[in-house]
Image 1: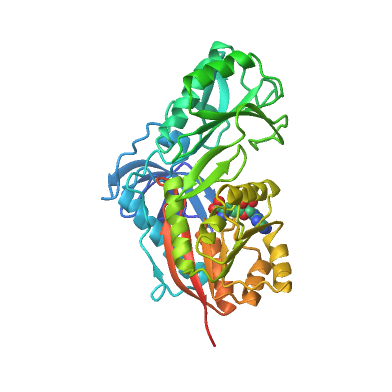
Image 2 (image 1 turned 180 degrees about the horizontal axis):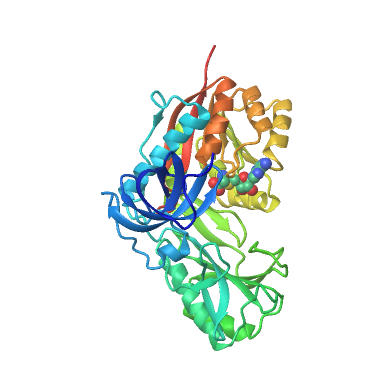
Length: 458
Ligand SMILES: C[S@@+](CC[C@H](N)C(=O)[O-])C[C@H]1O[C@@H](n2cnc3c(N)ncnc32)[C@H](O)[C@@H]1O
């Protein structure tokens, strides 16, 4: 069937829905058109910008009727940046939208009966701004001076930026001041096209509870022009920067970090707390970016695990052991498994740092290690999984089913793979009890969930 719309033509439409990535959906003779910045219930004029087989994309030209959920985006560069997809939606509207997306996805992909399984209202933040504890800022040049900002949507053009409203204000302040210092020394930015120049990214990490900051220079080469003077100026200006490191990335690549990291000043770590547990965070370790909501998320996982102190728990995809250490406070024994060796080193260090002894960590693919644990006779009462966006490996789900834990607590950053995996676990004898969406990334379209599944006793 030929598409009923033509590229560059204008159409008056009614928006009926909002996609998981925050675009409005209008239908023209049943043909869906995805339009950023439009909300359900709104009417307006769109220009078709792309036509694909079965669907198309449009640009919102004019609104004739607006939704009660619409607000003015606070950020002046909101449209250019594209990092926040939902700033034009009231915060309450964002939370409702995320709950709806989780419900619909579980029903559609997972065939979960959402009439019976409670998908709770999304837990939001009381102040949903300035939450990110990590800034990764690409560096460019304009008129011979450094600029630090973000890539304009769908381009590789860097837009200079002074302030990101979802970033910790201290991270922005550090980037601004460091840029000014570097400009006084005429430091050159890396140029992607010519593969020349020096500074590629500035990364800042911030300890939400400790207020300690880490500054990372990602550079093309291992030298550091005017190193002594630059570091002296930075440490004088920012006594809370406890760690300055240089990461060297000599490759032609979009990947931010290279293999080699050198300590320039202070310690290799900064510290932060989630609840009462202290974590050492190094330049490259994975650490959740919204510390306030991380605590909410982990507390929910802990609540669902219902530990009494007698249980053996497995934390698959454990990263630097954050959830494992949280669970270890209430369990008899926790086993954590993670694919990245450095993360496991961090996890072991973090266990020591907190005097937690009832945890054991293994490096490897969870789908390889867990069958071995099973063979060795390790019996888990609760298995917690927190996989990356692609979800759990199919064979890992089969191992979970074979290990017969009483409960599975599934922490997910992607409702689609959560739904797919829930369906497999349900076939294997588990029942979904409840699902709690948590807003870890306000103003963006991302949503995190914790799902509780219990083994059906026969
Ligand atoms: C969403 S993160 C969760 C980390 C941790 N639970 C936390 O909250 O900080 C997913 C983790 O899974 C790890 N990972 C990816 N594939 C894996 C696999 N096949 N086996 C074990 N770990 C894996 C990643 O390196 C990453 O640390």
